Image 1 (cartoon, rainbow, N blue to C red):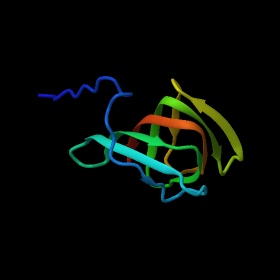
Image 2: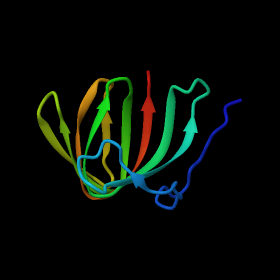
Image 3: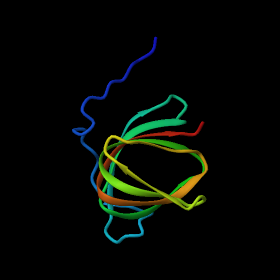
Image 4: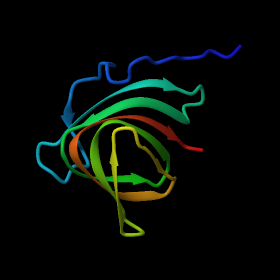
Amino acid sequence: MIDFNVFGDLKAIRLNNFSKKPTSITDEQLEASKELWVSADGRIKLGIWECTPGQFTADRTAIAEYCHIISGSALVENELEQTVREIKGGDLLVLPKGWKGKWSITKHMRKLYILSES
């Protein structure tokens, strides 16, 4: 039997405490998250993440990420193609396996993420 997990209001889910973002380029940038689900083999993870304004690098060499932006805004720069896209609440962003770049959070952001090693 398949066990269905339902997550209600994604804006209301409580996160873990904020801490310094390890890949931040900006002093004092903070992030918080809460993992909501992990596949039995550990290759797929789903959770909620928040980050304060500032810049950080991101490396998706080994994993793909799908992001549903719940609130906030950012500029996302693709390192390889040298392109920049603006994302905001309501958008869906796909970072394919192998993607590298930089995020510039312009307004405190909350997103639902799905990380997949597949």
